[in-house]
Image (cartoon, rainbow, N blue to C red; front, side, top):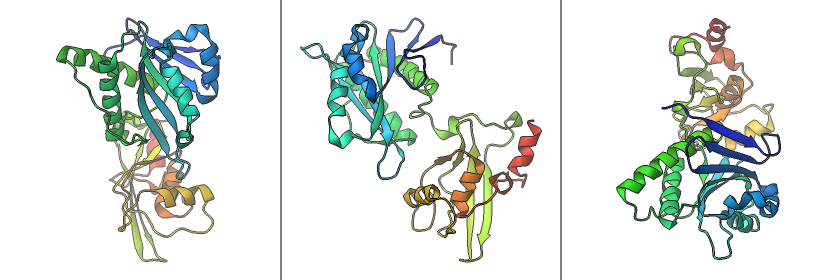
Length: 295
């Protein structure tokens, strides 16, 4: 990957407000917009680019499970001059999309997106998000890729690459698989950790597979999760365990991120345990001992 000059303009002076992102010598513009700021954008004469055609993302969390969700859509430049921004305002008034709290808009500095380009981008972004499986993608239908020439596809692939980079810089990992995140270990000597423990009360052995990354600690799909939990674990952990995608054989069918190794261990075991001691390399070295090497 080549070096790039990425500019993030914090329009409110805070990372939780409006953010405009650009890359040197690229016509693309990416906005991150809190839902509460849409009307303000409509009144702002400097935000004319938000009235163009483009692709947008709605981000939030599931009301039922608390898991991250996303919706990916497109908006053309309408006769009344209202494009993406007007579409977002429509979504704000729609009850079935009340889960989202902020949007990300992808457009251009010269309003060069036509129906072919935005259909292609919407299709590609949806497929990437579904394949990565970091978010629950709320799109009901598979967007059409449209009819695009190979020359234009090459141009759009470059656009997708830059958009992915900006999303990652915004800490939105909808396109980045867990396997690509950076591991915080000396010399990258171990990537996976294992947790094996017998639950005597139910004669069951858990077999957790974990990975420590810059984002947090992941319990990976394929882990064998205890169906038993003690009454004193937190209500939030109980909710995570109940909403996790676990099959009838107690095998985890998705990757789940936790803020700490101990939280990940608690999820696997169903009990309050010290993850720094319970997670070990394949050679039996505890996570805490590996961390000491990096101090």
